[in-house]
Image 1 (cartoon, rainbow, N blue to C red):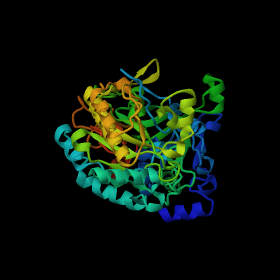
Image 2: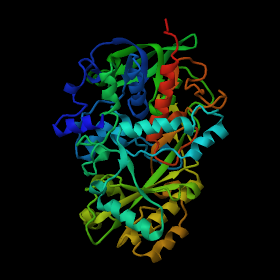
Image 3: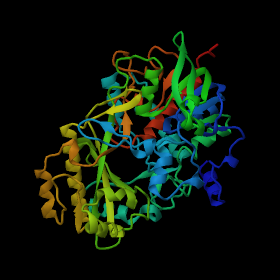
Image 4: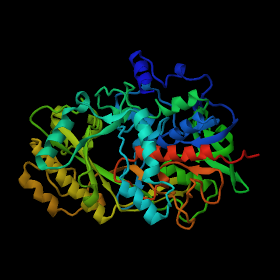
Length: 533
């Protein structure tokens, strides 16, 4: 499969080109002018890591599948270099979705075919075995998801999606400097494993891979499912799941067409009958909201929301770094995850996004941004202890979330480690973007990190790894999804995304989302419910 994608891209063709897909397999809700009805064995809500994987598994098993994706299908040949138009097309709320709490924190999610796999850095981390063991020991999963059952799923995904470490030609200087600094300081670090079809080293993952070499779901599992008979409705927002006598039987959605933007009363509707089941894979934000609109009233629904809180800092070097050359993320370290609960990594940012990390105004700011080739950005994510909730207020989704003071202290310690690493790599200045910490010019300035008080409003954070708002468990008093992946009390309504994870993972979750979805979808395929009459 990987070689087929590479060969097509070399010929100037991509698997997501409409000419490469079966006729009638893609229905653009953005062009809809009337109501539509459809029917399939399984209806899958969401086309990201979980939904696309489930669609591929079930269609490969011979079942008819309909996929609903709220966002558009932005084709590889239509990806843009500029950040703002890309975010408008690919990100939920154009990247402006935020949390409420003691600080406003952006929550970045893809809203397009492929979901967040289209806009992330294609990182393939397996969940630590200790995390999965904890799910069973503390949350009574009874082996429904175990490391033993996940390993063959990981292995197959590694093979099919060409998971491999970043090679020398794609590493980039911003990553090689990270490796040098880690070696000097005795910090365990490694090249990042990614879904890599031959990285073009353009540092463009965040706006969609224009070379078609990032093996995201819009190029892999979605086209592969369509070639196996599945159909996808794009620009189609799932509203609710209809149930009858405790059995899911249909999905109601609306098309986000140009006509609907002109007259809200004319939104064309979509109803898809699900003969065997409905699979929710809409993310830890949208999945609980759809369940609530579907009449699910379980006490844990929308609660226990967890995340990895992330931030970054920037350093200036005398020599050129040229972040725009190399993999977006090429090196990382989990050296501190177990004890200090943070992971550090490289993260190349385009000038438009780097601008918020640069100190000063006016001429001072301009001189720094014009020095872009001499600047690098490294990031960290905290395996936060905080729990929040996802709820609806006046029809709008609200994410309530505030990192704890311990989370903030771990974040501060991570920034101190990154500062020390930057000086070890030869930085002349480090720009902290943290209230109370000035520009750092030598190792002697690291004491500022020890003296400053860390609060959620102290720095610019973001959330991109989301978990737990419909967590799995055997008891419907404190969980939403049962050990068979079905929502408690509703047969044929399944969840296959990170909302069922009892906790966060401490590392990038995409690989585990796909492994869990592959595991769950395989069990569904092997023991299907009778056709719903």
